[in-house]
Image 1: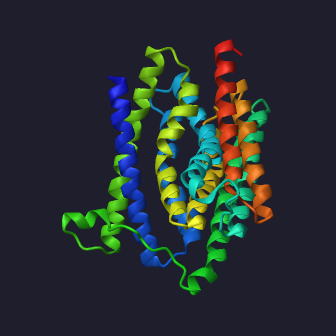
Image 2: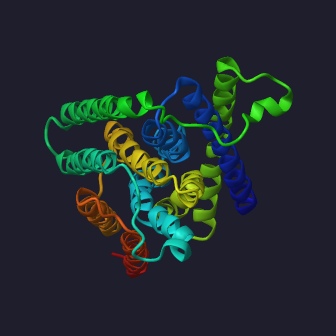
Image 3: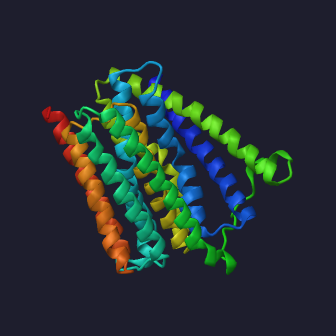
Length: 341
């Protein structure tokens, strides 16, 4: 039954995420917002909601327990890892035949390097915070760092909007590809109906995420699988399907900036804002080898892309390398888990 509920929850989560993103596209079009803002902020944040909800509900669950905390920490670390490795790898594979390994991505490199720099700063600060948990005033330091991370994301939003102003003036704003879902019910499309669709999708997303978490807990107990490994691997893959689907569609259409900013924007959201949940829960303790492996792989993947983005030379082969890093992480994590280290 847990496996059945997990599959049902997964399908419904993906469906609600797609509906949510559909409303975001129409809202961006109505507000005349650029592809960079829509990709990095609207689509990036919107499609990141499922994996954001998981750690929040897990860590602050009314039935607090070690398994729930492991799922929450694993989801926080797993999201940036998945975005910077497997998501880029799958996106590259979708156009590999057409573009080849040396295919150059035509993207707005200034925006990409901005996103990656904000992620590296915020994520590094969040990881360093784990070493402060034995300090006498760690509660105060946790709150201070959480505020710094919040301000960092706010500044990121301001710079993203500012950088896109020129593009909007040139008429380069997002255009929705599909009809608003709620129109199929006979309602007219306007700001009110767009917001209604957003709210309904968000509420259902939270509900189905709760079901999914309970299923993960049940499966981990039945098959004696570490909740951390499930949350590090299964949950991020499941919850980031909307990001992968949207980015694959956009890159195959030649809309590289929108495709990449969808991933990089979600990366900033997950790496800067989401750790605040773990930090404020007073359970932000990363004391396992699997923690360290995932963190190192994530930094390597992001730094690798950032190096080539600064050169204005991101190619399909660079994303393939990130995919290799992901599989190295999986092998190491299972090796560590089954050896008991």
